[in-house]
Amino acid sequence: MGRAKEEMMEAEERGWNRPNGFVCPDCVEDEFLKEIIRENACVIKCDYCGGRTCKYSAAPVSEIMEPIANAVFYYFNDPINSMIPFDHEEDSYLLDTTDTRDVLEQLSLDCNEQLFEEIVEAFIHNEWVEAAGGVWSGSHPHEIMSFMWDRFADIVKHEIRYFFGNSKEELNDEEYTPSNLLPTIGNLVLRHNLISVLPKDSLLFRARPRQIGENWHLNEDELGAPPPEKASSGRMNPAGISYLYLAYTQETSLAEIENDSTQQAAIGKFEVSKDLHILDLSKLPALPSMFDDYSREEREELIFLEKFVSEIKKPVNKNGNEHIEYVPSQIVSEYFALIFQANGKKIDGILYPSAVHKGGKNLVLFPNERGNSPRFDQVKLIDAWIYS
Image 1 (cartoon, rainbow, N blue to C red):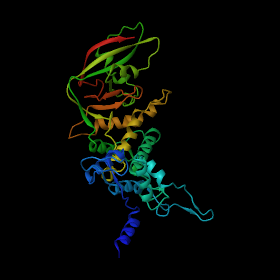
Image 2 (tube, rainbow, N blue to C red; image 1 turned 90 degrees about the vertical axis):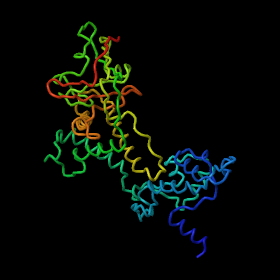
Image 3 (tube, rainbow, N blue to C red; image 1 turned 180 degrees about the horizontal axis):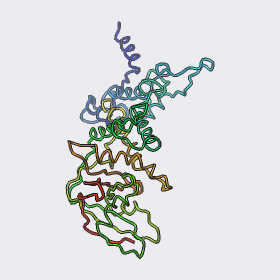
Image 4 (spheres, rainbow, N blue to C red; image 1 turned 180 degrees about the vertical axis):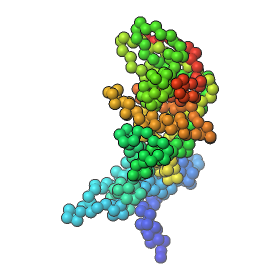
């Protein structure tokens, strides 16, 4: 068998032909693909932009074809192998298909125009359908985890409000019980190093509305966490359980309270008394490239975590049903307050993005001691004033 025939058979098996050109890092936007080109550079001139250097700067396009093709075959498949139902009477598939150009655009392949066209032409098939796991009806891991969260939220809001580990109050489908989902989120937190340290002496702020003419004292009793009997249902705390909500800036603390013309705002400045170990949801790690086959699991998990954070921080209409809408995030918070441990230790609270102040960060602290007189000795009030 000749080499040409062997190459043809290999191309048919892998689903793409090898382009002949050489490309430099400047001709692609994805950092992962840029790095592959740098590592495999073997000529001094790029065939696409004409760039020439005194050292090797361009690599064979085939070096980036493999990760690009792997991404295509991860998210798409040809209609026959993806097992799309076929309507013999209409002589067509029951789902719409798309072409290679559209597939690469959906994968955000941003590169030199000529290079893009050659990559399009390199694929043997030109008809595709979305197909997780190669099957049109399949789901990607982040989609399965997102469905788990949606189902979990629906369960705890409308079916089972309270649960205790392996309680007999289990549902028929064990995959979606609260006791299964919470450890999954906890494991993702550890895998992606989302526990950070808020250093001692850091400053935090808390705002509380105050009617004009009121003269209650600006002290820790009034500006700290409310007593349990006054602790209404909040984004993170269940009704009757006191958490301490703080913000990283005065501006964010003011944005978090509802004020009208009859009110001022009392501001408390708090100082962190010791290093705090917190779950930091304010900035997740960047998503790995879609073309990085080895980091695909990490990418799937981070996509889910992004959805999870958006659900935790999303604005809730104060229409009387907020106590129901807050239930999922309250249960998650109680899990991290009472069950979760990092390196054998419990954490002090959760840092999360503000839903009402773009770029703002909020910190909710768990009580060191619960009961009728919860204790929050992680911070101390050092200053207070009226803002109007």
